[in-house]
Image (cartoon, rainbow over all chains, first blue to last red; front, side):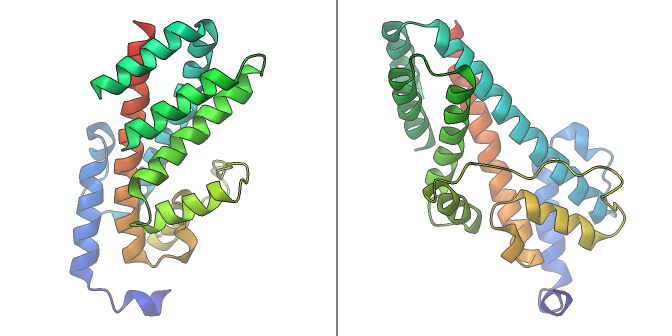
Length: 85
Length: 126
């Protein structure tokens, strides 16, 4: 792994790291600081985990909502969402 | 587009799940979410190709659980990169550069999917 790393320039890595940093939400970014790429990677891992948790959570909530709806209104809402997006 | 695929999947799930358990429906919705993410990126990205392979093998969608603090050394770059590799589909076969690129795209896609699901939630519950 380290032998492959020497072919990639430091500059490229830094560029990618700052691109990644710009994707993290503000609250998480504040602690990171430009100097600490380890911290940034850690924040990235935490962010991915929290996004996955959100997908899980929204899946549960959507499931519960869909359960309470009858077929006709479900179709209507879903079609309406489709048209709006 | 991501929205169309996901909405169509939701529609199918609504139609076909009657007495099935709530957790079964929830799992199907979750699977549809990851499927629509993978289809929207298609074969352009390593993470989406890996995810598509996983979905097509019909394997249950499992993701690595969070490691305990004791198990995760949080000091060196390489260790965090290893942790990240486990979180991004197809991660283990990527070098550092590729991993960062793929991670950025994966995060963008995840956030779009989350926003989409929130929008659907809002419009259904209003």
